Length: 456
Picture 1 (tube, rainbow, N blue to C red):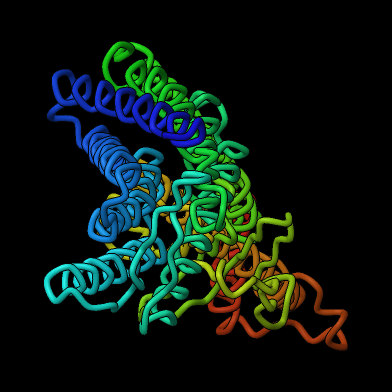
Picture 2: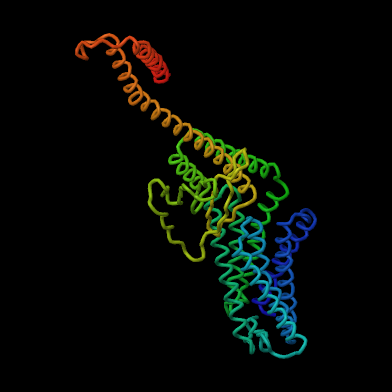
């Protein structure tokens, strides 16, 4: 048995021991923890695949046929990227519709590969792999792809692409919320990812690079995972409480700002901008409806800081261009004040690489109700302003038109009674004097009433 073979067996044995120990620890301590179950499956797949490789190398050293063992090892190794992807997305709570489609695609291709490899074992014919040869001189495995080489290449490329995008997702998650997870989690996942990516590289299997990366990644990963999932529940509670406090502070801030503004032209842009920037959404649109349910006023805020409202723009602005894979998801929240009548909607657009959780949705519901109440108050304030404007118009009419007319009536009646010289010294007939005097007194009474209305 060559030195290379002994080295490969030793590294595979070490990886098997590490992954098995971690699996036993997870099984005994975190059996009911959903996120840890995915890590348990990953450790079992790695331990099983490395154990089969150890057996294959021992058998190959005796000169026996290792084809069937290599097929089994291939099936187990192919399952590891799938379990790693499931663990990472579940651990970071990063499920989106696109990622679920990716996960299902990985599962379908994995099942298809498993069926093909199983048929190859049962029928003893080349489907995925040609007969495998173990070269004792350098302790390497020589193999060639079988008739379904196109499927095998597609499977490998798909897994490589998924692993690369998964690692990019981890980097983005840490950039956005680095305090939530330990950096050791990223380092451990990165080590496992690199180990899986280099597996298809030919003529390096005897160097056991991937086994070393598996063991290193597993050892790095297990401590923070156990710390978060088992030994540090208080920190999780503190993070949850701190996050809740930040949410409540945001609710209070937006609520105070919304209730302080009594003009819809100021209220809608300010509320939309505050929510968009605080949550980091792609865009936030707040629309106000009339009694028939038709939008009459709106405001839109974008992630780049641009804010538009219907009072400032004649038409709705165009949205910034988005990359195809980051097209936004949309949720629309009804805005209903305490009276229960819908007076608007709040539409949120978010990039697909950041899902909106239920806690965040609850906060948005509270904000929607607060903004709805603020809109209702602003509408009432505008109604009061319109009533005051109507009152001012009426008083102006009374003050100018009616008082002038009544003043003319009083002046003419007084002239008829007391200034006959204005009528060529012709005195007012006595029969008409009581009636004209009554007109004069009534005019004075009406003038006093008008003065009281104007001065009120």
